[in-house]
Length: 110
Ligand SMILES: [Zn+2]
Image 1 (cartoon, rainbow, N blue to C red):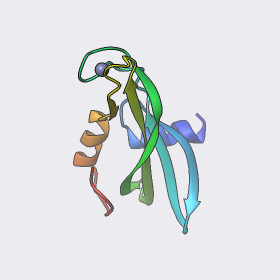
Image 2 (tube, rainbow, N blue to C red; image 1 turned 90 degrees about the vertical axis):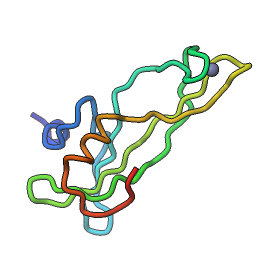
Image 3 (tube, rainbow, N blue to C red; image 1 turned 180 degrees about the horizontal axis):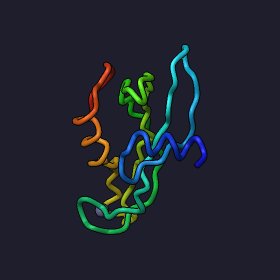
Image 4 (cartoon, helix red, strand yellow; image 1 turned 135 degrees about the vertical axis):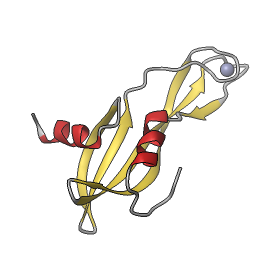
């Protein structure tokens, strides 16, 4: 098992991948993303196209006794229908569930 896969198992958030890891100011930081495929528009139910990412700071959690800082690379989508073209970000229920059950060590809540 490679180390990224091990981190994903440790976090245990269904469908969430660790994109990269790094150290920022002496703390371990993990950038995560969901495996969601293209969703439908919330307004008109047309297919939505990827429209970039935005970073959501999930704060610090414990993983095997070590503080890890999670940053969610949240997907932004835009409706493919030009008359609608509404833009929205993914919601990530699994991430919200993870936050509820995990000891939070500070940072911004969703
Ligand atoms: Zn739409």
